[in-house]
Amino acid sequence: MAFKVLISDPLSEDGIQPLRKAGNVEVDVNTSLSSDELAEIIGEYDALLVRSQTKVTRDIISRATNLKIIGRAGVGVDNIDLSAATEYGVIVVNAPDGNTNSAAEHTVAMLMSLARKIPQAYLALKNGKWDRKTHVGVELKGKTLGVIGMGRIGAEVAARAKGQRMNVIAYDPFLTKERADKLGVDFGSVEDVVGAADFITVHTPLIKETKHLLNKDAFNKMKEGVRIINCARGGIIDEEALYDAIQSGKVAGAALDVFEEEPATDHRLLELPEVIATPHLGASTVEAQENVAIDVSHDVVRYLTEGVAKNP
Ligand code: MLT
Image (tube, rainbow, N blue to C red; front, side, top):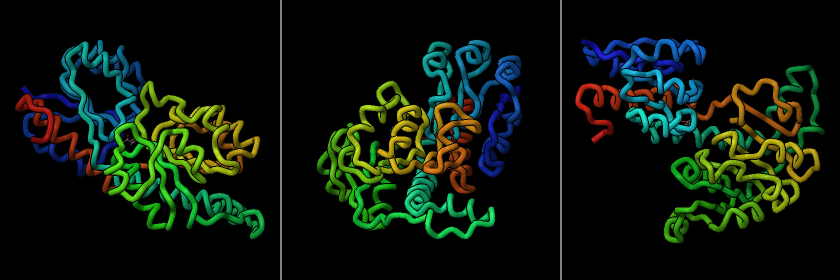
């Protein structure tokens, strides 16, 4: 009997070829299911593949009587109830490498757009306004970028920022002096980083310890006119505190790819001219989507057919 796999978020068709070619795997793609609809049908499936849109809740996992594995085509697993998965014996695999480059490139694109007000100028010009006064930017050269979270993506962003002749100061609980020296960055506590930086970018997972890491208190410790970038996860920054810090002039601008609640079409931060935004596009490149889909597809096939989860 064939294993049944459900793909409930849009994944690269080329990337899921390992599943299609596996022979004993039947693949259903349905990317428009509501939570209730998913809960209704999940009992039929041996594996579920998602990106970040599908919320794999305890309720869904408890009704997934045949489910053996959940594959997350991407890094963050905050949309999956991990303790429920463990309780019900369902393993969760992610693809931690495949979108590093795309996420780092998107962060740098946001950093440069924020510094030079490119989205605001674009919008004005598209609306027929040739305005060279409002959109005066700032240079990156000689400025300090604070990187909070120096994992794969944070380290790639730091390397690119140095190419822009920026100074980099980083915080990561696992960052040693040797590694910081090797990467050519200064390092310190979160307080050191927020106090020293002209631009701050966050690259941590969203976990209990990082929820609202940039809160009112952190904004108070920042330099006047600091600019903030978040291409990681919405909840890392307290959005109320960010809104207030922009309104007070403490924060000169913010570039957001992620929000606490997504989709975020009707968000008051989006009303502020100092905020530029994209709809969670950090990993949305042809290359990254293919990479992550290939990685999790291989993992799922291997687990279903051989009982082994990770690439050897
Ligand atoms: C990730 O965690 O990999 C990214 O946020 C991309 C995605 O949502 O798929």
